[in-house]
Image 1: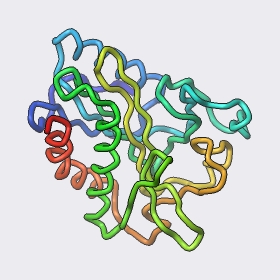
Image 2: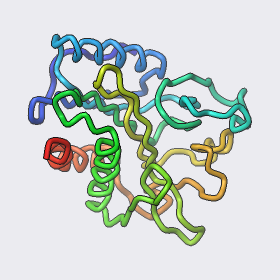
Image 3: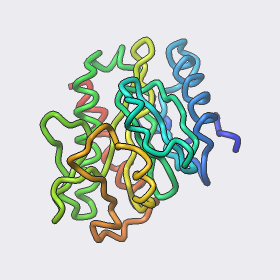
Image 4: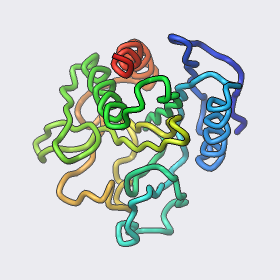
Length: 222
């Protein structure tokens, strides 16, 4: 599908756009790379881009071949982000964040930490008590099966402009994660808002993300 490149809603100068339907992963990656280059060149505004993808496995820069259990199940793409293998698919909100850290602190650790906190504050709108886990990037919840990941984080920077971002499991088919070792972690599973008993819709999640976004931005420059 064609991606929209025109200005949309904006928050503190950052364009905010929700893409309808399912967005092809390779096309999204190309769009994001071009947008990041334009941000660096000063010809485009920073952007938060919310999408859903058709089922796909993506490999980060630390991906291990043995963690791709079923390579024929879905298309596999090299993402260029940090991290290992992950899954994207319908029912999962992927949040692509394209910000210029050259003017927002140049602190990658702070950026990743604030991404996690942004998601945690967002999920609190729906009475989901999420947290971070020492030594494990992402957002986690306690379940009867132990700690499980409800949102994955994977980022890349090009000349201090951020790419990729977060993937929040609203109501994806969790069986699709079975074709990989998600993020290389074998002793903790993945979950979704629906599995946790939440009936949160994608639109409701988007509104909560948007409501908490100014606080995320403020934390980057504070």
